[in-house]
Image 1 (cartoon, rainbow, N blue to C red):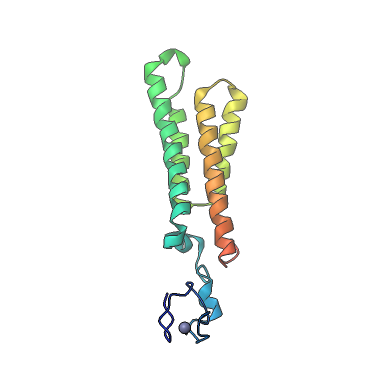
Image 2: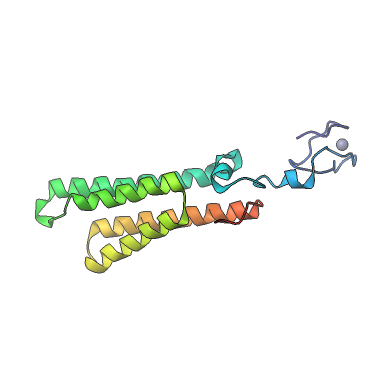
Length: 155
Ligand SMILES: [Zn+2]
């Protein structure tokens, strides 16, 4: 942003110009970009783009796990993979991208651990574990950034 008085470049959200001391017309509250925004609105801000993208990639990864299971089931029928087991990762991926909630990410991770506990060598379990960890990290990092930016306490 520019100072309304001296027109020099000053940091975004400055309450007063560090160069000439003029009031910029911004209140202290305006400097907290997430103030009054809910988490989803916060993710729409340009500075939250990275968080939004990493959550989206985790969702894609979850959906990809589902597709991978379908592929494995077709290529290697001897593995005995059920097509129905492909629906869960896809559903989890959609849930994550729609809700952007920590619950959906944690459920994906727990589901992966459950699969691994049943079949420790199952490649779909490991793939889901990677996707689940990515989902948890991306959502929690976004939540931390949201709180740091002055966001409301989450429900
Ligand atoms: Zn100034």
